[in-house]
Image (cartoon, rainbow, N blue to C red; front, top):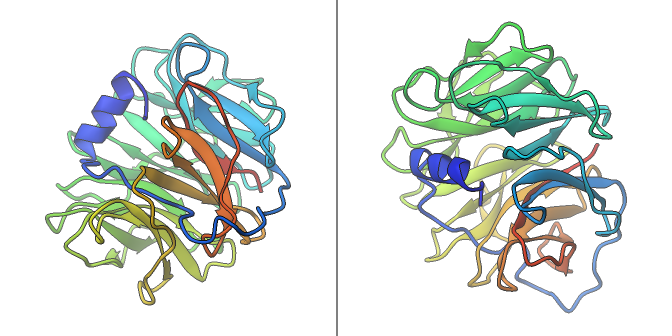
Length: 298
């Protein structure tokens, strides 16, 4: 669901062989979570993939990127004033930046590689992202103005989907360096790369809780893709969801009480929200096009 051409590239390169499922299986009879803030997301509803934004209750869905090229994978700056996203509008995929209202769209990474999946540091000074510029996917780091681009992971395997710890000291990411996809963590300078999940199943797409104590991710360890929660050191793994649909790519609310995610449980990709214990699953988007990859504003 990354989109058309980019979807194929990312899914084949990053080997997302799993179609994970279920941020929100248990307890759908409970009251849905309250909704505050904004959620940015991808949608194909205008004929090509664009970055949209909506209120956290699903209202006010608005196209921000509004470009005939592919635009996707939004990431909010820590102060909520800007959104980094990926776009192929200049012929190859780069990390772009825009104001939260969609204005001021600028190419940040400006490379000939394949740059995607931006993640802002908590202080707003740096952006981690994944890039194919050296022949395999690695996690890179750059300043928020696009300068100082540095390869952090430097591994012949595929590394990507970075996410910062709330204190800015560490970055969680995906890697297939041990033969299957695992969630790893490293220091923000690239040192201390450590496997957190260490499971023969495929584990993907970490999302750090706002208090830094937990990491949500998705995995096929129970036979189909589900969303799981673990402590930040990899202990205490708990399944949050139990649904045969494809549910994946979670984003925490700023207060840590709720998780937004993408799911095709109603027949096509939509954005949902649930309580952090998996209860109160509520659909936010309802469109025949594909919607997904939510990002909650600070």
